[in-house]
Image (tube, rainbow, N blue to C red):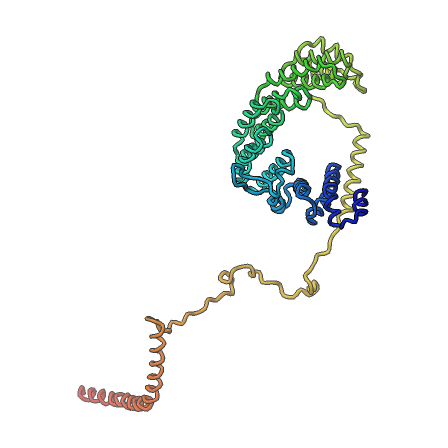
Length: 464
């Protein structure tokens, strides 16, 4: 660069040279941005911001332009960068730019920085901060369009489209010279909110564009959606009249007349559509207009339709067709010739052959380590049933001899220990007594058995 070479000749340090050339570097990055070279522009802006050697105004412009290029991506980082530029004031002015930027930047640049900050707050759903900043902007830039547009954006984000339409309409009436952008915004808000009549009304108030084909098509579509067919037709008629009186080279009258004729034919106004088509045929000899004229005249005047039909070029293959006999029949039937049938059959056979060739048997895929020759025992057919439903299920037997446990757990354990101790001693001490009782019992059991026959014999003797 010439400036860099000049400054190097003055023996300035590299940092001083970069500070002096910072405004030029920012302007070069802005040129890249306008040319559509977004990566190069972002890289240049990022380098200027990271080195932090530029003056405050150039640094503020670089931060703002980088935020614009990023858009809704990385909102938190963009907000942090803009927070470096905006700070809250102490007096009547609630917000102001830091580092003396209020006096170094133009009003348009300051307004742009504030507007971008509001948009980022809306994207991050920080509605309270956005509402507060917009209220401050209305006092700081009272005659500007931007604050009212931002206020409408906040209201739309809060689902208050009706209030936004009202505010925009009031501003357009108060400042007619600045109403174009506001009315376009009002039309956009109303169309998105489902108010087509308000959107059409807003577009109709913009005198500069209301006769352009795009605007005419939009207004007609909105009025048609609102059910105002007469109003839509009036828009077409007004546009045709305006272009008829216009002396411009790029005349759009033919395009609008063609669309107006098709619109009127669509809504059952054949006479007016026929007049427009007839005028197009006379002035431009358009084949499309002649077709439309013949179609439209068939609904109004059959003789005229036939005369227009004769002007059309005959279609090939229709000379030997009797139209009246076709109208008497219930419907045309397609008769296939023998050659055609043979061709179709050959085609189907070849198609079936192709399908047969494409079908091939695939080998079944077995699990790893499985031998299909020796598969082993078959799997249990009841393997998917619950255990209780299987034929091999046997419930576990409950021990009925187990004593019922009552009371606290510690008492049970203590009683068990005592019982086991007494049982062992009792078993040891009573083992001898058990043996004695068993011997006595055995001797006693023998005695009555021996005494019984003696008693019987004594009875028998007494009877004798």
